Image (tube, rainbow, N blue to C red; front, top):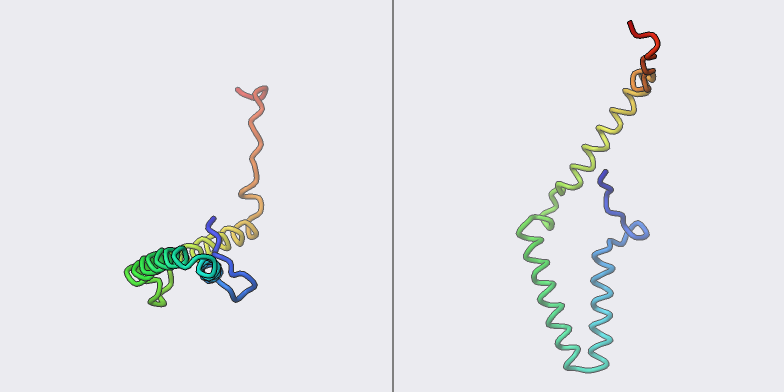
Length: 105
């Protein structure tokens, strides 16, 4: 079953944690070697531009609910329906006894 993505500590999304780590690495590289830092900055810029393009193109920045979230909600609703049906009729889903071969006609 799909599991909704969890937030770290309830308020920090994993994508912001990754972005913060990337910026920290950029700062460390820039302080170590300016050319290496500029190369890392260019790479971060390209990755950020690609992410922004995909987010705008496929609508994750538009505020519309994602398909994954809708799928998770639908699966949870079905699961709840199955549980309530099993609670209403507990003997229906139980294993049936096998036929005794000695009692065959």
